[in-house]
Amino acid sequence: MSNKVIFLDRDGTLNVDHGYVNEADQWQWCDGAIDACKLLQNARYTLAIVTNQSGIAQGKYTVEQMHKLHEYMLAEFEAHGVHIAMVAYCPHDRGQSDCDCRKPKIGMAKQIEAKIGEIDYVNSWIVGDKEADLLFGKNAGTHTAIIRSQYWEEGKLSQKPDLIVDSLKQAAEKIV
Image (cartoon, rainbow, N blue to C red; front, side, top):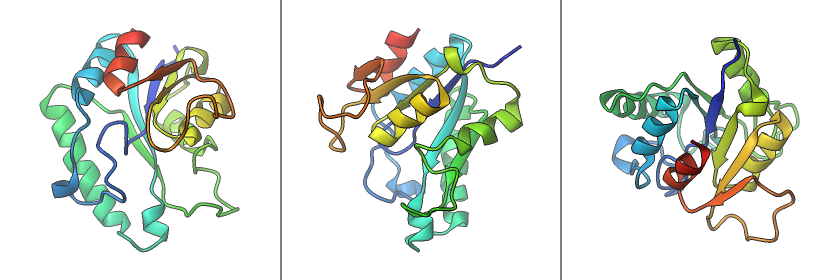
């Protein structure tokens, strides 16, 4: 049986994007993010995080710092009864030509599929706040929900998302 997956962007979707967040004391949950994930999980979606982390390649923080932050994030999720199947990340810089994992490429989706088993992409979703998230979903064949942010303008996206929302919570309510 295939997994219906909600691919979640991290910065700007789960946590407030303060720019290169890499320490627990910089982490600030987006309003309603944990409740939204609980709602999606209760609707029998597998939750997975797909996050571009170019700050690693740029020397702004280390892979170890990122893993420590993800341990903190996952512990917070688990404390609220939310299970994240996997956190996939791309440590490469923008424009690195040999990278197959940086969104909008779908290498992270393939990493998740290798861990959890076959994914039902047609009934899965990506929720993110950047056009790269939208294009990741289009490239993977999932539904797409994009959160309004400073990173794009309505009417100027290269492709039309299935949903345009103000938050992950609003996306979750519409998805279920």
